[in-house]
Image 1 (cartoon, rainbow, N blue to C red):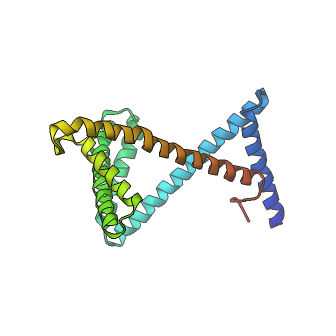
Image 2 (image 1 turned 135 degrees about the vertical axis):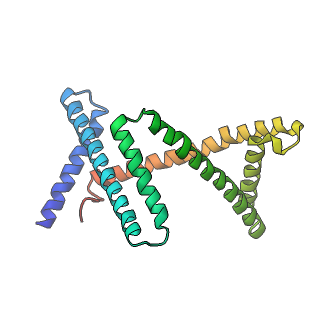
Image 3 (image 1 turned 135 degrees about the horizontal axis):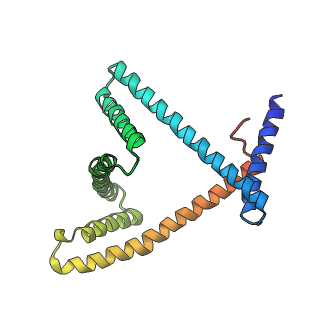
Length: 209
């Protein structure tokens, strides 16, 4: 019985994936309608999974608050802000002034602070790497980090060097960094295609053994 249910799930997953995939290559009305319905269903299921994960997050933090565990005050702050944001969004919509202000004056400053801390941490890590293992890759990482910092903050260097460092930073960002990012995206795309084909062919069955 278990094996039969596994085969049934494999057939359903393969059929759904094949329909969506073929809809991009074949201009058939019925095929397009079924593909659209399948994608909308997937979006609804993803939203339901997100809601379940949100409820689980709230439950975990409420447990920490009830048990007075270490860091429970941060859990209380998270639950309160989550409740406030969720309530304002549901009652007044995402374009409401209060909701926008929460993101502009709370979320964005926190994200900017974390990015600044990340920049300092990466620079310190690069210095430690050079001190412990001075090889070509570590030196290139440290030099790139210094160039990016000086190119983004010209007041740290002499006025005559601000423009060359800015040009070098732009070149590194638009050529090397973009090239590396595109390579990563191509790798992710190829990996996603491979994983999808393995699911379509029932080689991998994440929905059952």
